[in-house]
Length: 149
Image (cartoon, rainbow, N blue to C red; front, side, top):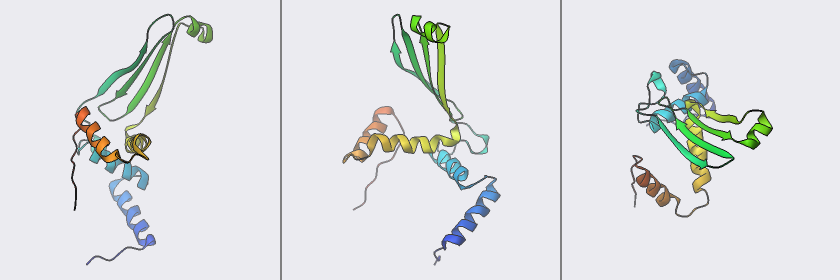
């Protein structure tokens, strides 16, 4: 039977594992491990890639003051949300009629991003497990559902 590790023993074991695996600390090790789970073994560890990249325009405003917002996830797992503004107001503010800006999230932060987004979407909701399962089904996201009685 395995004994329970003390906090000190657990910390020492985690430091050894980080050293063996070549990670700077347990946060990076955890992010890489979760990314591998999220990507089913084809994640960021070992220089491997996800199977495909994703990109979609998630907002578009036509007219004199144009705005387009695009979401992209690279094959490496990095996320980018970018916007492009064009028009008279953009030229007045920036001196050019085309202004682009974005937020990049590295692949190593993907597990934390997924966790935060799912918490934000489903916290405080009685039906969150069923809603999440329906979301995965609707979006074609591989998942399993199980129960225990």
